[in-house]
Length: 183
Length: 274
Image (cartoon, each protein chain N blue to C red):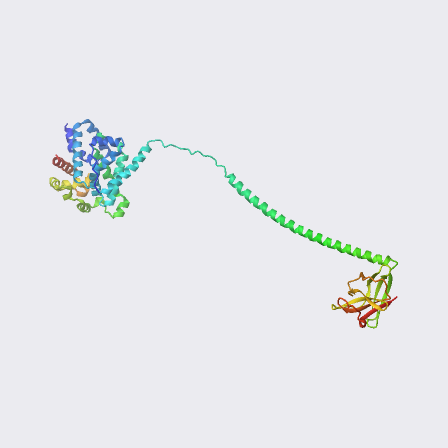
């Protein structure tokens, strides 16, 4: 099956098309962001089928609540990734999902989460080796806990036994490193 | 500006981008971003970095998922275009339907016809039976009428014999052969040459089926056949025999059935002479 050429629009064009409820906006949105969003979701929810359901749910929610987004509040992706993360975290913490997957309490088992992460990370595929080198391990740990695991910085501080200020600083430093790296 | 720099360095903007702030903090960040381009620029940088970080960590979803997600959105897409409109409240036009009368009419008409047909057949059968009875009665009545007519005719004949002065009555008496008391009365009119026997007066043993009584007239010593008769209990009429103009005596003999040309003298039962 030959893969369709992916549709790509500038963020302004995409936002306008979404606001006008144009059909092409849906395809562009999926082609441009599905992989990034699925990367986040599939790190929070390991089970592929559930992660796929959540990706679908995310796009449905984006589409339906798009009127709630405004460009003044920030980038489109930031708004979307928060929807994806919140859905995934809600799912992870939902009672039926815990029972179903016999998941352990998120807050009480960082080691378990790290093990999960290791099974998902595919550095050779994602080409983040040099990126990992730019981030200090303690920076990356906190960034990933918050970004990919749905921890609040307060929970991360509790979990790691590190003062809240230090958590915030390390988080900021990590992102500073990323900025440097991408520039 | 020092405040802004400290605010940026506090790390709250990063937490804002990561969605890890309280609603109050969120509003504060958004207000300050509108007021201070520095904060806006800083936020934008953080967002861009996180987006790139996400892209670096991107996982391509399965190919089939694209169609699934797009289809679910397009399904909703169709819904959305109708959601905005006030749903048309279409009040169905209610027309009270008349019950299918014609159908029932024909049904009942057919049933009525059938009932009439059956009733007619029953009446016809009954009428036919009555007609048969009537015909039988008529036939019986006609038969009776004929019988009475015959009887009347016969009685008139008898009456004529009895009233006619020319008739002579002769009582034939039993011979030695016949049982004692056997007799029969013969009426004879020489003028009219007629001979009758009165069965009422007959007192002789009943003849069997092989034999009959035969009446003879003796004319100048010669027997002349006057016919045969049966002596039965149910015969009580007068019976006309063969004609004879003159006779000296009458006699009855028992002969084989149908009579004999000459009398068997041994079987003479009764005899009477003028």
